[in-house]
Image (tube, rainbow over all chains, first blue to last red; front, side, top):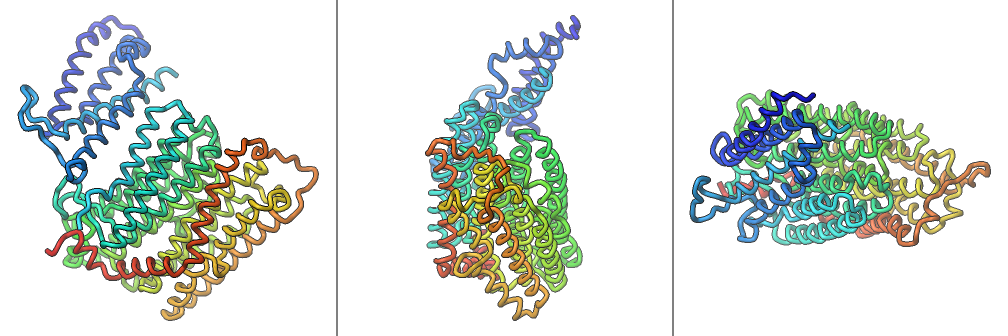
Length: 135
Length: 501
């Protein structure tokens, strides 16, 4: 289904949705981030793009196969989990940088955990949906 | 004592799985990584076991939140023993899988999922938080769904659906039980629950809640009348997968029962008789099923059910002697059941079938392998002085001193049926001459020598451990009675988790 209205709308919606997903990633409901929701919104953005322009086009703007997001996200997630062990703290303890970063605010290991979740969610959902779509 | 490194075995398997995900299409790298990761995991598990043996119960507060509020991980002797056994199984199965699993399955991520399964098992043994236990159960069942259906043959999907339906039902019951317990006490930490559940006014409700856990864990560990999913699904996946399932998955249910009933719901008379009835019927139905099966793996599946009955009966008697027997039997059972499914896989490689009436002449063709298999089968049956014999002494002793004559009788029936079916299998598969007109399509003889070694070595390794358990029974007995004492007197566990409050 090629609809010019959807295609034009998607051109503007994709960046806005991605920006919104990054916002959700940084601030979930209740402060520290929402990697899962952010990942869902980002993957919905790509799914919308694939509805409008076809799955092949979406894969082109993604550049990498969505399945390759999963190990990257997982390793980020696990590294941020075990990083406190190096300092003699229990796993998953939140470590914080001393200085706040402009716009984002305080950055801690929890953020990297959330980025990991974000990537895994995008990878899993796009892999499942694109596999179905391409069949 | 607090030790932040007790989750190391979990992280090792997690890292192995992730690196394997990165090498998604490189099956040789995945095989090497799998063996390497499992061996590393085994070394760490041995270290953890020794540390706990020497310095007592270790705990870790995840994310540095104090005990009743955060998720706590506890390594006591029971947990570390099971972690050690799981790691041994992981090494054996990952070695066997390198040859025993088809390349097509590896390309669809057999190895990463296998390590996720082992990770879930180890996590379930180590966690001290009941909701976290549920989470690890979910990790286990999701990985096992994938392993069960990987390859997508029709029989596999059929078995997978049965398996999935029953296990999701079990999880629902378990989760409902957790919800009610949380509503009653306001805590999820098992040590904290042990204290707070006694202060609940409405003890009838507590008793009812424990039924949710019995049903949940009962389905998982395949006790009567909830076991039907097991024999109808375990013969469908490849033998390496069935070995992990048969050796470990039902035993997680038993572990969870031991934990919950020793800490939270101390069995009263009603609970004991309920468990005892379940145990007796499990043994009887399991043995009846084993008697009529002709396929080796179906036969083994029913033997799993039958022997789960021994364990549940021991838990029902709930005394130090009975629990010593249960723990000893658990240790023996994990090693032997895993090995039996690996053996089934090997027989399939040797002869191309698992139907007993089409097999024969194995002893004539492969005498050394047959002798190795005989050791394992004798251990299973419990010929003294091999490992299956010792725990039964304790179970018998306690059955007589508690006047549970029916259970003692079914124990005897179960043991004799095991002896009979194994003897029948030995006579048919190993001693009987191969019928001439059968064409044997053995894929074993054409394998390269190192691949043959990779198939036989895991069986040899597990058989050595079994021999060690049997011949060095005094050491195993010491550990088992230590665990049993810890299960009866949970004071040290609670103190280790909550401190001296």
